[in-house]
Length: 125
Image (tube, rainbow, N blue to C red; front, side, top):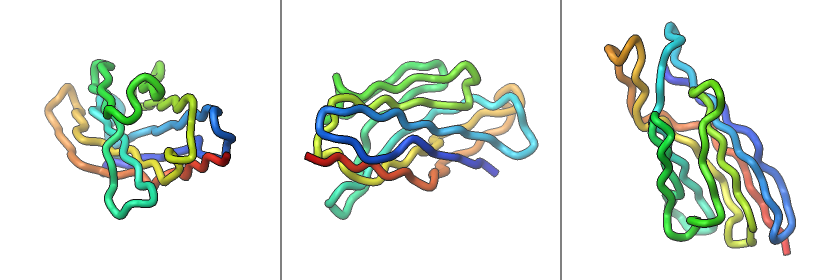
């Protein structure tokens, strides 16, 4: 029942920036709050955790991106923005947002582990 729409990927030069967006919704509800994570898949086979932001807006980052990437909530708390700064070619890959936990109907209803479709980030030298 959880839907995610990702956007904001693209191609930039080394040192450039991008802002990714992830908008979440749950069918039948308008009052949901979300714990959301971001992952990326680079040239390796495994999907790598890069960041998390709690439903009250507190972020956490992986060591590889801390200090360069920043998560924030939009005015409507169903949307999360992920600012990627000082990008390098090693950051190239598919970036995915994920709803870890959605709480709806004054926290009476709960939904877990829904993935977005991904958005491509390409950094050239």
